[in-house]
Amino acid sequence: MATIPASANMPDTSPVDLPAGTTRQSRCRVDWITTVVIVGLHVGAVAAFFPPFLTWQAVLLTVVMQLICGLGVTVGYHRLLTHRSFRTFKPIEYFFSWLGSLNLQGGPIHWTATHRLHHQHSDQEQDPHTPRHGFFWAHMKWCLMFDPNFDPFHKYSQYARDLARDIGHRVIEHGMPISTLVMAAVLYWFGGWSFVMWGVCVRLVYVYHITWLVNSATHMWGYRNFETKDDSRNLWWVGLTAFGEGWHNNHHAWPRSARHGMKPWEFDISWVTIRAMQLLGLAYDIRLPGRGASMTG
Ligand SMILES: [Zn+2]
Ligand SMILES: [Zn+2]
Image (cartoon, rainbow, N blue to C red):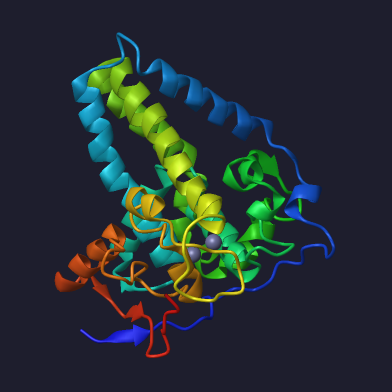
């Protein structure tokens, strides 16, 4: 199946009228609901390591859930919805969108909008999470804040009009808390509080920090294959734990490429997944770097 060269342009990105001369940092106030939820999940994740919650069944369940749900963020939210680096059939697109929502990182429209804003203003004033404002800000503080100029639906949806027009993604967006509660209820049904503490708290805290490291660490440490205008880096341990998302300098150089790992050792399980989908006839119009993809390293 033919592939399409990745262009530097983002799909359907229209600038929101953010006030010039300000940063998300300066406009924000604490989002107490999000903060309490995230702190509560961290407390639950620590408690999960003590009896009676710690069981091998719960640990195994968490590993399997992470392997499946994690792809909802990397293949679904990021490469499929945000960058449109490949296309698939609508039910599969919705499935990945829903899978992404089970990671409680915001609905597909908000996640996509935030990430397109990051690419449009990487490490500049309007970047929502650049480490130029400090590691802690880039890692997690930015998402504990509410930005009145971006976070209301009618503001951020301008950055993801393609998704906001789609009733399926809107249902997944607004149904995200219900999806999580239903998932927790199903886990309780099968394995009691042990499954809930591990399948929800431990898994979410793990996937939060792995995702956040892509925003913080891979804009600070690592090597560069491409001389991009931002601070993006390739960081091997984030590359492996974040399913290929840690080859972040490659990604900033070729944002629409479905493949992030480009050198032989840059293992990218999300690309392997997309390639497998392609072989099964479930992914098409896959975008890859063009002939101009010369590396500096
Ligand atoms: Zn980045
Ligand atoms: Zn991206």
